Image (tube, rainbow, N blue to C red; front, side):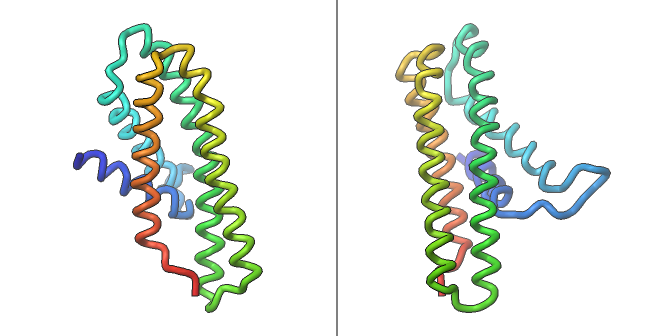
Length: 157
């Protein structure tokens, strides 16, 4: 459980933090993202109880899903950054609040659509119970990340 919390807190920071510092062509953000991906992969592996053939078929799907999820995370990070900019300027206008809300909801919808799009592929390589387990793990991880973000992001003024 401690490892899960560490992974999730790191992931929350990775999603919310803009990539700015550069070190030898690799940003600090990129290093953090790679660390989170490795830790998350270990967490999923430890909880999936995959057989050899299942592992061979699952991990390429997992990698593809994570790549697609990364695009959603980038959208979420942009929404958070836009909100931070608006919030730091004082009271957020109704127009800005509406735009941010619409984009935040679109991000959530995109995440659900992504899950739905991967279910048939996962069902081809895993029994339904393991598909459900994997999506539960993803959902739990994402819920904890969202909780960490919600805890750090102030309410609209």
